[in-house]
Image (cartoon, rainbow, N blue to C red; front, side, top):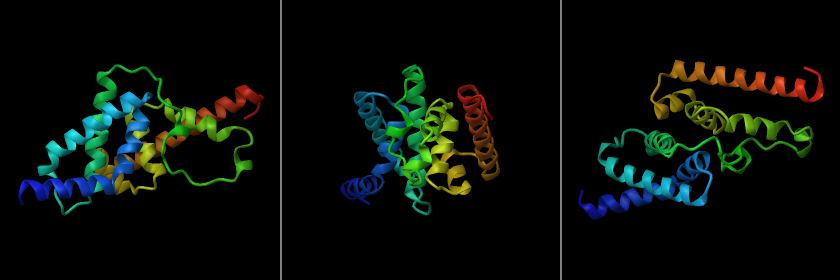
Amino acid sequence: MDNSTAQHDFVQLMAANKGILLKICNAYCTSKADREDLAQEIIFTLWKANSTYNPDYKFSTWMYRVALNVAISYYRSTKKTRNTIPFTEMHIDLPDLPAEADAGGGIALLHRHIAALPELDRALIILYFEEKTYREIADIIGITETNAATKISRIKEKLKQQMRNTQTKAYGRP
C-alpha cells in the first residue's frame, strides 16, 4: 500500500472514530488548549503506530487503547491536579433519565465522584458507561476480561459507598 492510500485510509478511520478522541480529551483535560494538545498528541501517536494496527481487530478498540495510554501519560506528565472538567460536560453517552430522576442531585453527585477517580478507574467506568463489553474493555485497557469485570465491580461498589456516605452526611440518613 502506498503512502497516499495509507494516509487516506487513516484519515477515514479517524473521522469515523472521532468521538473516541473527543471523549478521551474531554475526560483528561480541563482547558481547550490542553484538549487540543492532547488530541494532537494522540493523533500523532496513532499515525506513528498505524503500522502496528492489525486489521483483523476493530480499529476502535486499538484506537481506544492507544489514546487512553497517551492521555494517561499526558495527564501524569503535565502534573495536573484533580481540576478535571465536570463529568456532566464530558461527551459520554449515558442512559437518558427523566428529569425527575435527578431531583435530589444524585446524578450530578455521581458525576463528581467519577471525575475524582484515579485515571485507570475513570477509564474503566467511562468504557462501562459506553456499554462496552468486558471483553472490549479488557482489550482496550490491556487486562484480562476477568480483571476488567472485577475492577468495574469494585469501582461500582466504591461509588455506591461514596454516594451513601454523601447522602448520610447531607441528609442524616442512609
